[in-house]
Image 1: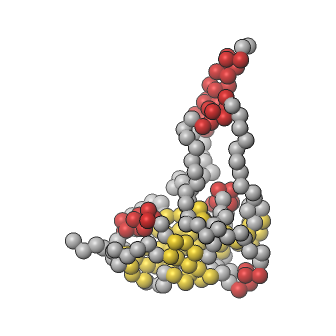
Image 2: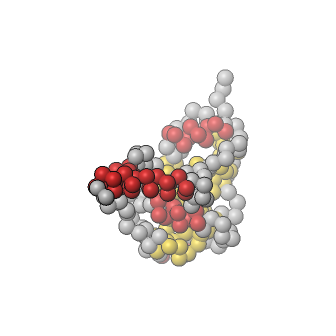
Image 3: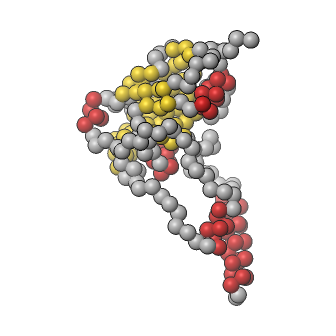
Amino acid sequence: MTMSVRVLWSACASLLLLTSACGEDSQVPACGEPLYGGSATDEAWMTMTDAAKKPKDTSQAVTVDAPSEGQTFAADAAPPRFTWTPPISSRTAPLSPVRHAQAHPRRTPGPLAWLGNLLIPTAEAHLPPYTGYIYWVQVTMPGSQCPVNVLTSELAWQVDAGSWKTMGTAAGKDLSLQVTSAYLLENRIKEGPFRQETPRTFRREAATP
């Protein structure tokens, strides 16, 4: 078998595998990946989503500092900063590295990246396993199937313009903020996950016609 034939055969086989996998349940949630903040990684995201069906434990849930319960933001208000405080017991745990960067989506490879790696294999870059506290922030909007999801190692999220615009689609209605926390040791949950007993409620005013 010549080199060109082997390459063609491998490409076709890989395509068939990818096609057959389309009908299987994916481990990635239907709403896609979250925005990432601080030192959060996609591997930590998969750990948190895998644990989402566990019974809710509120014993060491965070306390949301901002927004306040029932807070209303003006229609033209700048994107706010949401903050939360962990329970005192969790502050004694080793702190995770902090990068003061705004939450951002993970870089997505191009549609033909898999074929390029097949023809010219390259080592896929992976971040080191994450150890530390991690926070999964969810903002749920009435009428929207998917919440705004953020995974961060920090105790705050500066809402980005895109997410603020998305929340604005439910202007005049109550929005729900939930923060789920856990302590990870090399991407494995050692404590938690912990969730608030009651999500925080806030809203954006509707723009005046």
